[in-house]
Picture 1 (cartoon, rainbow, N blue to C red):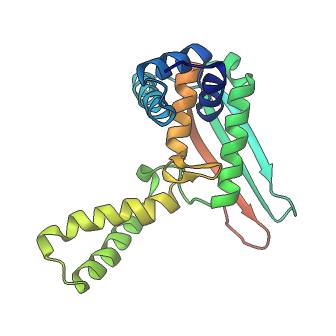
Picture 2 (cartoon, rainbow, N blue to C red):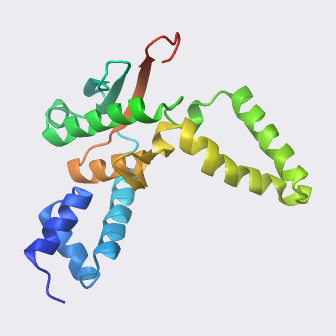
Length: 202
């Protein structure tokens, strides 16, 4: 199949990857756009894993105020160098994540941030539900973990949430794509959410 400039442009707009990476992915997948997207995401994941141990001491604090001025957020997102922090792509990523926080109202950055008592309470509730459904005790734990991932983590944890502008990817995958594109480790360090009239909403 001929790899047209239009196809490359569409893949680039959907993944944020460079032109040459998009061309290579389309060649490898014989012009299959969906397969090329998946291939680029897998490469992004591998790239992010290789960079995940690097120190991040630069970055930005970005705010977002939702129209109507009743909901707002602040996010600290870190990278390795001031050069990358000043790029348009990094700044846009930070703005998108701040918007995500305001729209989806996560409680934690990642699963590791959930207090043990909160997690144990959620597990106990889910296990009670599973056992009431008549599921055997020996498979209840696996079902609980599956439901935690699908229903709890995906709502409570920012990195596990579906990205509001493309629900086929999570915020974690969005960051992994940025890591592959910008060539530096990137993390969301913290965020605060402000909802008018609600104390302690951060």
